[in-house]
Image 1 (cartoon, one colour):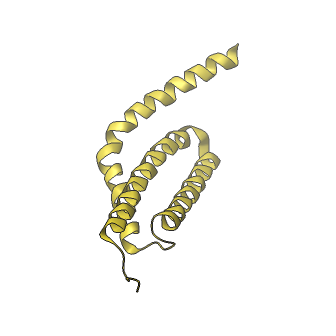
Image 2 (image 1 turned 60 degrees about the vertical axis):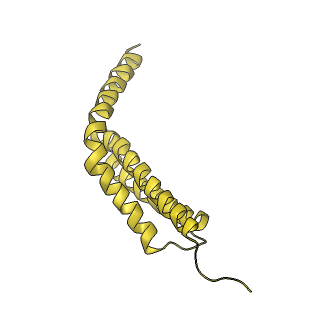
Length: 115
């Protein structure tokens, strides 16, 4: 006889994986924000499309890998909560660093182009 239901361990792994994925999505958003700042309107649109496709693919793979082929409400909520916490809590301290990196990369590329 087989047991029905989901184990607590599997639920813990799936919600943890979705939270880690939400944090990674926040980091990707910050990186793409820097690219969007210097790339103009078309670059911004392409960054947004890439971000949406990346999150969709990541959530699909999460559902297939950790959730037995289905993505439940808790996994989606964990993803969104971690993404929101990243934007509110971590992003304000990380964005200035990315801005410095962006400016240094621009200066470096200008030097290469001049040579």
